[in-house]
Length: 138
Image 1 (cartoon, rainbow, N blue to C red):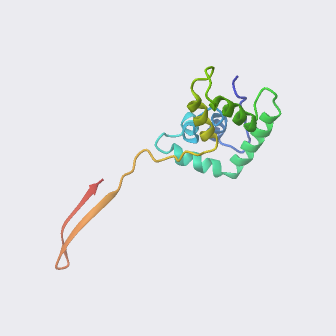
Image 2: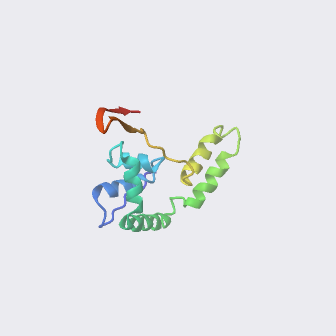
Image 3: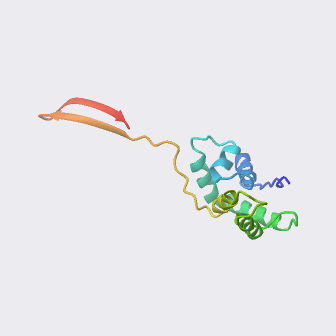
């Protein structure tokens, strides 16, 4: 079942796409990428967007709207169902997948930046004059 698309008058088109992508993407970063944010800055963009007051209002309104739809499980119902699937049994042989989804719902994973670059500039000074200057990326 596809999640209903939700719109809010005070959100940009990209923020609206992010809002709708949150319900299907495994992480906020992936939702931001799906909404059209650059993969290089998607984690930061997701974090900033989620803290935006208009976005928080739109998200709350969307959750209320979805709560009224009997075909959509509430967060608590989803957690309960995933907890059932996390119990080992022959019908659902992959309980780790359900546990992973539960952990993501609770934001238990730490998002790490894709790359880290540190720039060090080394300056050699002899008797008050710069002798050599170089930059090295690590």
